[in-house]
Image (cartoon, rainbow, N blue to C red):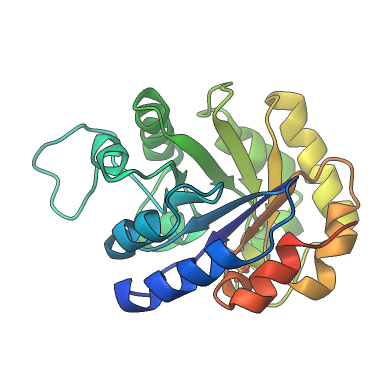
Length: 231
Ligand code: PEP
């Protein structure tokens, strides 16, 4: 089981250090891999506070070039240099608001893996796509740019469930995860309004290998409750 907390654009360095120190001192189940994904400016204090622990620090994005004239971007090798363990790529908020495409997602994933970062690649359909019966086609298109790789994890995050309080039913998650696993032999996380109250039902699905948690990962107690959830 892997539980990753996506902090989005929350928690600057001042908030990150005490949060990560508290996480460091918390009782975490040994059979659960725990990851936090702070904003870029908070990566260094997170790496520092969690040094020597099993908690992984991931970025929320990385560029495909090693360096260059790409204002506002950060490369995989820079993240490695900082002691970051992995990165999210292709989060739906990047696709929705920042012009991320399947092609750029593929390039970012490839560069991150080549630099030795673990990657959680996010895919998922919009509400309109699900209602139009296009979920399978969308997921297959988004998966087509991802390589089979031991350091790759896919997060299935239906866009209509992110930050909305609407969660896919455990059966919907299971069906989508089975499709993903028929294309790539990788762990698959579910993401979309995961909370302590709904985590057990989701984790009870055989194809759900963990969760990518947004809002509920910002509060230490609710994040820990999800990490400690048993199906
Ligand atoms: C996310 O940011 O990936 C996410 C799933 O957010 P939330 O849990 O808030 O829906």
